[in-house]
Image (cartoon, rainbow, N blue to C red; front, side, top):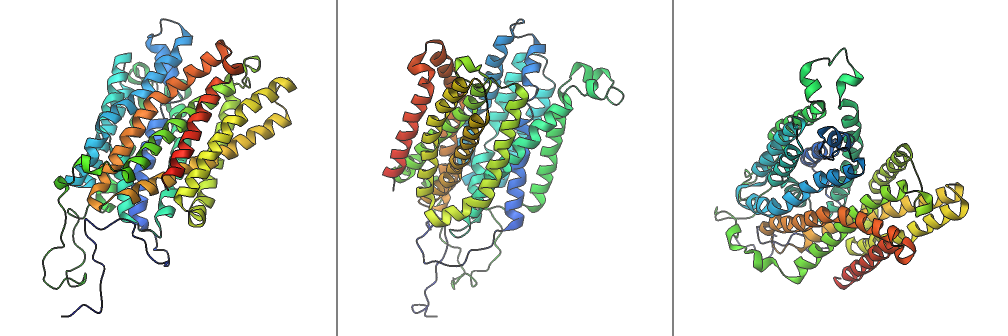
Length: 469
């Protein structure tokens, strides 16, 4: 059959992921597939944030600080950073393994490891037990990179922005449910003594929220087994015949073996620049998330706002709501209007502005002797800037996906990106909070040295993003 007058585009492992093409109607999202992936992400977000309400109290009760409450935050920071540090060591290997054996098997390993580690965390009676459980969770969990890869493989250029916009929304939802669950179920014998008056929960007072998180992982594993379709083309079940794809010979489509894609061959400027941007943005984002609550709680005379925990929680909850709504309503539309790279530049520019606004808020609070309507208005502007800044992750995911030279390299590239981000997130909180303390203690740049340093780093990232166009 002569097909010279009716050319067809045949997808293969070496087909570019986002080819330049004429404008066309948006492809509907594969609701069951994307819904299953996001359910996995929701379970992980709930589990990872459920420990935040009680981790400080747990460390106090373990006696690791010797009664020094000022040292609790240090040990809690270690626990929170260990997951990212351990993940950084293995996430690339999991991503590359998913390029060989498929995405679903790696997700099964990650979810199973997270389930076991949560149970071990709840049964921990020493600080080192907590350390081991968090490290095990990080070592076995390469899911975030694999899930991003699956989303990229399940979408096309017309609906990718809509799909990636859902990721931070789901994480915001998990960040709301997780702490609520952890706070309610920790030490249940204190809240509901009639229901939970037994010696086991008396000895393991924080086991219940961990057990619920583990059960959630089991449920998600069941859902994934039933509904999640494999996206790696060499492993998924064929749904179309060769004739339907326009191949008359009956031979399988040509595919480039994963083993032929060496890691070194992928380290081109097109791939490396988005990954470096992702790592820098992850560092800036986690630094902001660690810095803002500390800024809120620091007394006014030291350059903070003097908020109590209840007020801090209220403002952070308000940010979570604003952030989720903002992304749901505007992210996909802004990507369509501005494009991923230009929107990323806008997001980083908002971070630059944020590092100017925070010292201004500090000055206002001191000048006005407290938090009044003017300071509150400035805080609202800070929340808006933070929401705009948060869109940078969605745009970077799109840029990283588009940078993959072939489909079979996407898992490895996402693994590289997640490794770099995990390293940044492991060092960001401790470094930034230490800089904040040093700025105040030594009055560096009027106590604002940490904001200046983050301002310079954000400007550098803004330049890097512009240079990558």
